[in-house]
Image 1 (cartoon, rainbow, N blue to C red):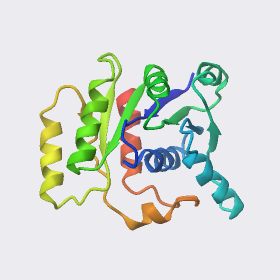
Image 2 (cartoon, one colour):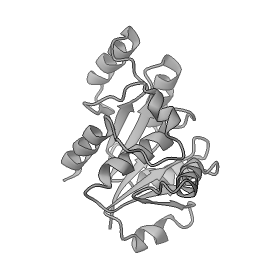
Image 3 (spheres, one colour):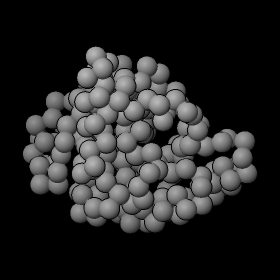
Length: 197
């Protein structure tokens, strides 16, 4: 069975697909990786298709998955690591991905609204499922970022990655391409491997 990392947040637009794709890129240097696109919008699938059309194929597979096929796909998976990119508004799919995860990753910016939705997401994940907040789109010199980090450092319900992801224009411009550099996601991948080994 692969290591399953479910990328979850009940709010859209918080960097789930970007995090899934960049983490897959970071893992792909040493592990067989698959991204499973569980979001009906198909952002991860579109990303992979555009990269292939440009002749810039991704070093990992992106497959569409639905809740019904999830267990079958897990039994048949040959990858070392599977990242499930979940939709924001489908509680049944989110719950399915959470219950099959070795680790749930909850992306959020430090913005108040995003941060509050991350906390709501974390509260709805059962205690026995490990979960960790991934702060992205962060201006690491801002007060709001420092307050978000300080708040999470004092939480017992949800852990936080030591590494936060900066607010880089290159993340927005990389859609539909093979990200050549993993930036902070390579450090987050290392943290994940250390946590689950």
